[in-house]
Image (cartoon, rainbow, N blue to C red; front, side, top):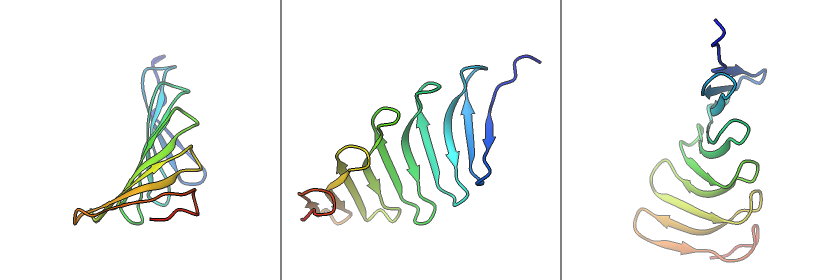
Amino acid sequence: QGAERKVRTEMPDGSVAYYEGERGAERMVRTVFANGNVKYYKGEQGAERLVRMELADDGGVEHYEGESGAERLSRAEFANGEEVQYYEGEGGAERMVRAEYADGSVQHYEGERGADRI
């Protein structure tokens, strides 16, 4: 008694957030959504940042960089192993700059988001 700590929060939308750490310093480490997607976080309490998201619908994995609140997509890996996409730009305005394929081919992209070209 007196040493209880938060380990899980169940949301009305069906998502569940998981926490680690000592009482009063619990930090979110993972959120599992009702659709099966899973987001992973790193950082101290109040400064947790998104680092990875596993996509349930296609089994892909997205990797993120940046500080809490300013995360940006940096890489997307397709579940079949056939393609890895690399991104640059600020969060919400990322654009694909390169795609690498399992056969060894690489495509480079230029231009702004939505108007990019190989």
